Image (cartoon, rainbow, N blue to C red):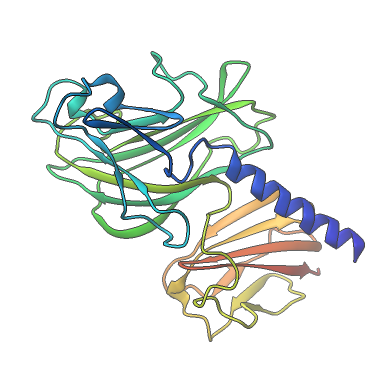
Length: 291
């Protein structure tokens, strides 16, 4: 029991540290500058525009998610009618520098970038959320989420890194753009982003009214699969993350609508921690696999 308590303590500490690493990750802190506004800890297009201008592509929005976390989100708007920085809904942590160098330090071993977004594309445009890990200034690995689908309600995203077996990293960079970074500016599109974190999606937390109060799955102990409880609406569960007893992420499963069974055939016998995410809550449960 003592070992299990230590494992869960390590897991919780790892989660908190991951959340804290991204500067101003909830987009709560801003500084007014004449007619414009700057995002604290980040460079954005506004910072390269005359502060006396009347139009700025990046703004602070009271439309945020989850509602219990903070008061603002970041709103990025691309506008092909302009030809300078006014055209680009673009932001990244740190100061403006050519290329894509490291922007902030990281600890641990991040495996995915998580958060929430809404997107309103025009003219076939695509949004892009990218992240890169570095070691001693050199690129280690990274991931990217690019999509042109309209998303009118706050939706979570999960961007895993390409190389999940990397040895180590000491810094990172995140880029948010309302346009496709690789394809260029082709439309007048709007992207909202909120509550970024590494590995674990920030939610309203345990105790949310939307949280199911019983057991999410059975059997436990399990062998080759588990089945989600019939009392839980399948489309309310977004993902299931599997960790070992020390809190190391083994895999994250993004559930399809009506999916009930989760394959465990690749797991060895032992104790695991399941982190189950719904639209409004998170639940952590122990799972024992026996062969």
